[in-house]
Length: 146
Image (cartoon, rainbow, N blue to C red):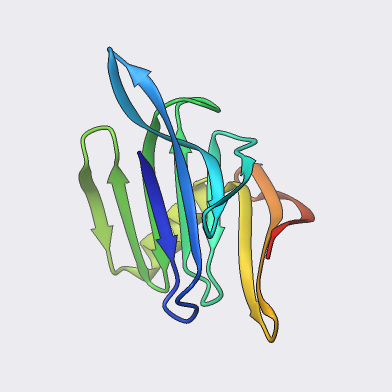
């Protein structure tokens, strides 16, 4: 069980958030392991994980615990926000209101946050900060893979 992320400007790019947890005797998506282009590179270090794309689109995923069920995912892209409840596979809200999008983005913690850049030699994937309290980012660049 996994979530796969790709990027249109780099066709060979793929990050996978995988791993499952047991809830009420059923396997559910937990996504606590991460692979870059098929190679396991790390395990999640917080229950919140965000990925920022080069165009500033952000995907934020929240889990019940470090290895627990993935509860929800939010995407922020320009003026739009979409929030998915992953426990019942439901789009809970979607908006094209820029003020609402900014308010939600500022209120939601990003947790462990990574990004990637496309270079002449390929792609670099790295963490840029951790935010466990809204608007309090601890900046630290950590290379994860290329």
